[in-house]
Image (cartoon, rainbow, N blue to C red; front, top):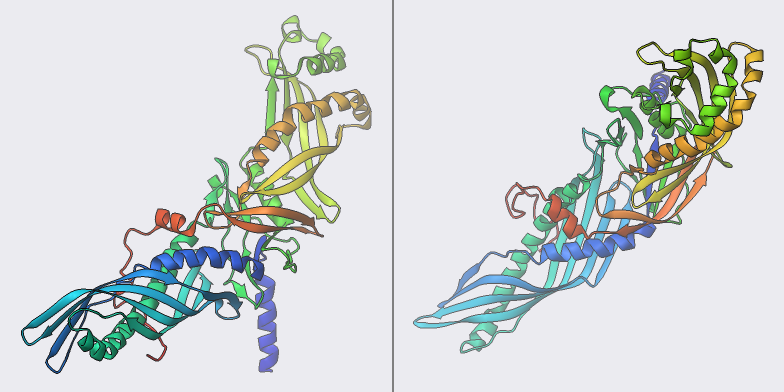
Length: 496
């Protein structure tokens, strides 16, 4: 009975779960590029490691090692891979560091000092990034686990007390190895939870597309990792800026991602595009009014000839009045995605009227227009752009069939008006595009669009238009903690 109740609750929870309008899959093929850029950034971070002074005494000898600086860093063998429950794992083996420090030795009344070059070899680092959804719907590095160890330390001692240093080298290098172990993981923890999160802060969550609508890219749940990819589900919904709390119910087919040949795949359902068109409809943007000289001269003549009988019955002051042509979308357009292509269906009213000066407008006709537009999607940089083309067009009267027959001569000139005057305006807006939820400095290249039943997918490769260092420095938090502070996690769980 308890099992039956749990099953019912699970079904109810699934029925009320919000479907994503946008999905992104990052495949293992992207990891080599990410690793190369990440290692460059990581090397710069590890080169800033500050090692505390090392002081000690052995019999009558007092020594002090200070001003330890990293002079060279070689991360020769490294691997970046996905791991379920850990998301992203970086393994570095057999790395080596070059160091330079100041030595001071006191033996009774004798003193010796100078600088020494040293090396740390057999450095191993294992770090895992846990990715999750924060309360605002943003992707975050929620945890960093780290293990680090230094196998060997060598120091080239010289000078007056060379033999003494060689005797003390075991104590000194062991102490330095211990201190170096203590510094690696706090640096990686700081780089992940602070610096990398500042990069993820550049991913849009709720942002304005233009002056009328915005888009919501909130994560619906934590990212899910497998051995070959990382999947993320986003709300992918537009909204009018004047109605920030409004949302369109998502009843579309859930987009599916199964490919893994490219570095990244993005999927959009019909809901993604429907919410955009309904948002613009609610914002009052889907209308166009042409008055007087704005109406093409040839179309003006055709319209006046078509309604000549009605016009001649009017007063002379009205006959010569400017002509007004108004197109107004009657209901939100709808998008249909099929393997054969993507279409947008639009129903609008067309009103033709005269505008006598200082008088109310005189309506000559009001008709209904049905249009079907083909839509081609493309990714440029990280903007999804749309190119629209008029495929089907017809006008009719919803008053009588006889009036619909009388409108047939207007079919061609009105279609020409749409192609010449209206479609360029729509394409100018849609070609601006909307940003895909990727961090700053990363773009899509070599994209391929594939249509499915109810959704489309775009496969692409990634390109770093900016280095991680450049983007992170630009967005670095002003109040970052020192990675060596006690608020950081334990330095390492490896045995030293």
